[in-house]
Length: 209
Image (cartoon, helix red, strand yellow):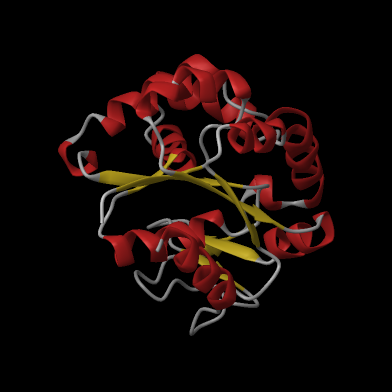
C-alpha cells in the first residue's frame, strides 16, 4: 500500500511505537527525525554537536537543519512508494517547506500532559543499540538491561521532568498550530493516544485502511 503518512502529536504520545508497527504492516520505511538527529549526535558530526545543544534543553533544532536532513532521506530508494514520517514537521514553516510532497494522511495522536509526563518518565533507552523500553508497556526481561544486546538501559536527559515540561511548552506554542494547518487541507485525522499501545495502533490502522 503506497502511503505518505505524517504522525503528529506531543512528545511521549506514542508516535514512535505506532510508526514502528505501522511501517511493518504497510511495508514502508519509518522516518524518525529524532533518530536521525541522535545518530548525528552520537557520531559527533557538526550537525550533531549543534543539534545536541538544543535537544538536551528540550528545544527544537533549527528548521533549515532538519528540513535538509529530511529531504535527503526521502530521496532514497526505499521511500519511493511512501513512508511514515515521525517527528516532522514540527512547525508551520517546516510544513510549508515540504508541502510539495503531497501527503495522504496526517494522524494526530492526542493525550493529556499528565499521561505524557508519566509515560516519558518511565521510558528507557538502550545506551548501546538505541532500543526503546517502557516500565509499564515494554518491560525488559532483566531490569536495566537491553533484551537485544545486553546494553545498559538509561533515561534520556530529555525524558526527565524539567525537560519534559519544556518540550510540552515548545510543542504547545510551535507544533500544535499544525493541527489547524492540516485540518484545513482536509487530511487530518484525530486518534485518542491515551489508550494502550495496542488500542491506539488498532485505531490508526482503521484510519489508514
